[in-house]
Image (cartoon, rainbow, N blue to C red):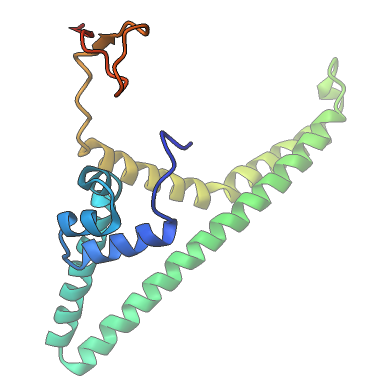
Length: 196
């Protein structure tokens, strides 16, 4: 959802601006060069630039930590990191397949449930058992994905606990202008402002 006027800068210009800020160039200098307000640059890029700088510092720390290790330990650490990434990717894949399997099993259980006699479902005990087994299998297949979602939600909730809420708006200024009495600049010389 776009707000206000379209940006004066293209996405590639914003990207270049972000990269240069992350490399330490000043907001004032870039503001003049790109012809855009310093506040607009800060508003749009400060969070992104801070994340980039933080990630870069973490990468440097990891690199320095690895270089301090003996060669065999360094190789063990790199191999372990690769295994952890592989496990993470495998878990994501397992969650996706589990969700698809759960969906298919639930659909099969639903199809069988549709075939039941609503007035006398107990007349088909084999169908009821089949529905129960399929439902249990569907629930079991979905567990990996649900656990990953739950863990992700907990991580997001933890991040949100530490987020700073914006200040509420406590004042609104209303300017009343008589449209018949404007000067050449379009600003009424006797406009009245009230703070609510």
